[in-house]
Length: 124
Image 1 (cartoon, rainbow, N blue to C red):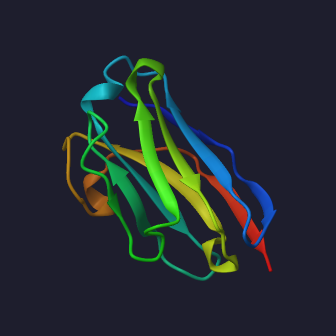
Image 2: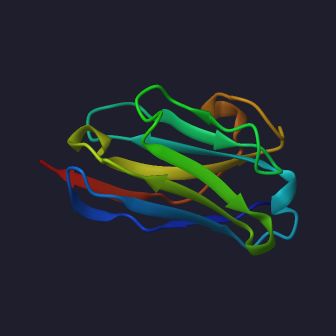
């Protein structure tokens, strides 16, 4: 069982930045690939970014490419999502998720472990 907890969300203005954190208490966290997903008020859950177990092989959705950066610190059992140049359409609940598949772009149903989510609201 992998437990995940997101933090760092909040209310910001367009153009601002936020850094989301995903922390785990699981000792084997470094063995898992991690993804970030989001769900807006009127949208289905969508992929945002993912990172491989060693911190490489990062993948981004086109909507966030060039603005968001995913990273991880396995010593701290943490994955981060740096979000820059935020737009109102980035408003959503952001979730981190862990998969046994160590690298590569994976669909949401291949992530068995999810955090509770953190709300990000971007005002125009």
